[in-house]
Amino acid sequence: MKKILTSVICILIFHLTAGQSPQTYHNPVIRGDLADPTIIRIGSTYYATGTSSEWAPYYPMFKSNDLINWEQTGHIFNKQPDWTLSSFWAPELFYYNNKVYAYYTARDKKGFSYIGVATTDNPEKEFTDHGLLIKFGKEAIDAFVMEDNGDLYITWKAYGLDNRPIELLCSKMSKDGLQLEGEPFTLLRDDDHTLMEGQCWFKKGNYYYLMYATNNCCGPKSDYQVYVARSKTLKGPYEKYKGNPILTGSNDILSCGHGTMVTTPDGRMFYLCHAYLTGAGFFAGRQPILQELIIDNEQWLRFKSGNVAQLQHPVPFAGTKQKNSNILHDDFKSKKLKVDWSWNYLYSDVKIKTGNGYLILSGTQKNNNKNGSVLCIRPIKQNYTFETQVVNSNNSLKGLTFYGDDKNMVILGYQNKALVLKEIKEGEEHILKKINLQTDKPYLKIKITDGCICSFYWSNNSKKWNLINTEDKAYDQLGRWDRAARVGLIHCGTSRQPAKFSYFTIQ
Image 1 (tube, rainbow, N blue to C red):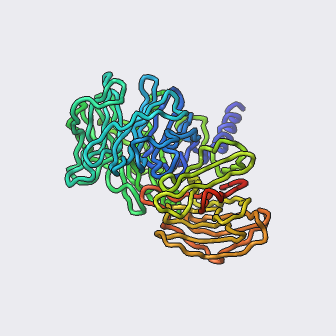
Image 2 (tube, rainbow, N blue to C red):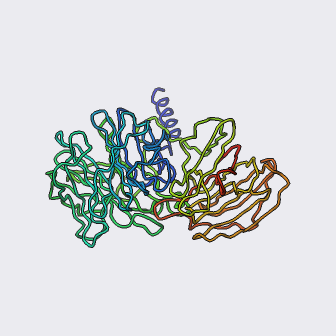
Image 3 (cartoon, helix red, strand yellow):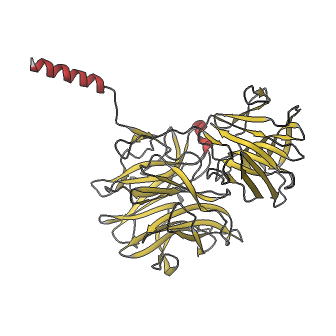
């Protein structure tokens, strides 16, 4: 009887567990355009940031307790550092002596890309800038810092704009991490002319491992991939792995690389880098993906799941589950703007006032730009809608935008009691539709399908929507080479005639 009962129980367990798999997560782990990600761990909390390019505030900061669910907490800078002009790329976080450092790339006033440094005691608050750290040749980008035997070293990509091989250079730093000491030396040189950047450098066991990205970083034909080299001494020579690349694209993932390794409290290694999704997912830009690293029997670094990037992996920590957020709603009741918003600082002085259920947006256009001030959100999916209500009428055009830059966008707006649908392509404006409205507080909505195909709607009451365009139109050229298109609110006009909105929803 006992044998029969045991058999029955075993059969029941088999049927109950058949087909089940370990809990998994799905890449990307941070949704939306966030290229060149960097990650650190403080205790059991992880922090990550990445490129913000021409959007302010600068370098959005995220935190997580499980590596797969991330929440934005703020930005490294709310105010532009004095030495910079534009192009806020490739920040690198470094935690040392209870202080968080951010080594970041930006263009100086002459248009050259160099590396600055900022610090904070709390990564969830704004950093204090310490100015320019590395001004080297025509270009110094992609900083990475390592501590070795009590000394600090910083690496960067050099000679990318010169007619000579790219090199990953290194310099010793002062104990406080704010100055260089001694002459730079070479860690690795691109003699194969495969390109070389976005390095991550650390010591594990007997070796110093140098991970880096090769090939082209950006765009629909890009082919970024991850290489590794190693050395038993810090200064080298570094031996390139014969099995490179250790991570390359797949049918689902395009162009992966430029990341940072972080260790869990129990010593496992995870690598956070960026990649495009293939198909319509491409239009969300370069998004952070996470994969586990191991060291094999021959002491080479490789990825646990193999050298082809994967969308799905076992969760890093048992019992955790990846959450799915599809809605962002802002009712503008708070006087403090939500951290999700960003604006085009390069082309206008954006003026924002929020509270009491309204957002007032205006700005003074700069650089002879007449195409407006925008307040935008990073899209995180390929199919979504976003909507608002305009609650004032004047000579300014105000409403929704699908926005690449100041010369490439589409606008669904309201102006002088008329609905206006227009596109701007390479600076040339085309009015697609103009409709006189009886209401002076219209609701506006744009539906995005497959990442770039737009349908436009308006409503009197936000319940019954009127389709404006009878044919959907693809805006697949809005993304810039280093950033994806964003969606949000726009104001085109003088600061004396602002735009006023009652809410914004993207879902």
